[in-house]
Amino acid sequence: MKHYRTIYGLETAKCSWCKRTLNPHPKYSEPIPVKLIEISRNITVTLCLWCFEQEVKEYKECEEDFEETLREKYDAMKLIGLE
Ligand SMILES: [Zn+2]
Image (cartoon, rainbow, N blue to C red; front, top):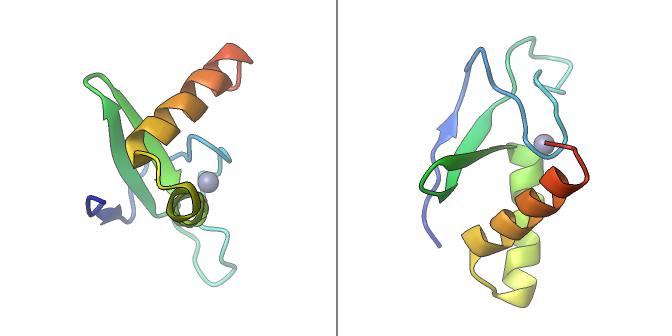
């Protein structure tokens, strides 16, 4: 699995899955730390660290291609109008 850099303080940060824009930790009042994952040539999914961890956990259980799994999820969300 590739290493995805965590980006802190990105003003436009918004998690593609849970839609959070702010760090949920009460101690920090800042944009949510995110990881940008390119799932295809022109689509980048933004995941907060919490959603990312969740995906990594699922990925380790089923060992499918990580980005492929995100792509399927992204497409499904688009279909039901969540993206
Ligand atoms: Zn999230």
